[in-house]
Image (cartoon, rainbow, N blue to C red; front, top):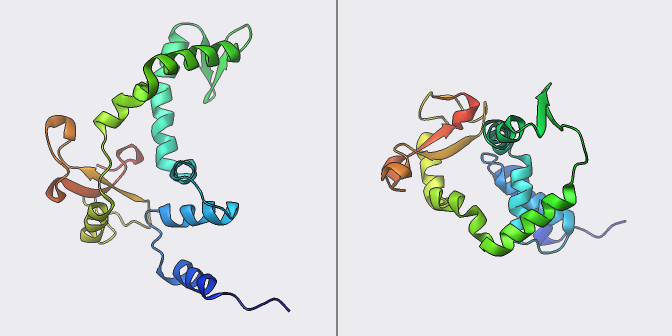
Length: 182
């Protein structure tokens, strides 16, 4: 007969079963990452786990690939696009040369390689996000759709690149724009 579960196990089980919010899906994914490894997880690994299951992020980056890098490489005759997939045109993949170029570029520029993304998007404070989502009562503030239909995100009403702020009055709960809202 196995030993009785510990108080910590019982508290965790109770939290998962009855108290944990499922929108956004971050809490269960973080716990799954920790439970799966049974050791401490760097925040970066938790973030990768969340991003790996966030369909809206995958959809967003799929559109970026199509609009930017895929368009450029296809336009230069390096790749072809058909039936929803990219393929190389002729020759070897030359993966090692790509890795060398990427490593040299990152060595030269450091983490500034991604600076254009972080400067355009500062993360919204978690407690502010919670207040906006609570104010919305589980509904998109643009179209009224319920969070059970699709996950909500917190977004700026007036974009920051137009001089707005992260003030709660400038934030709204909404479906991701790429998902067909607004």
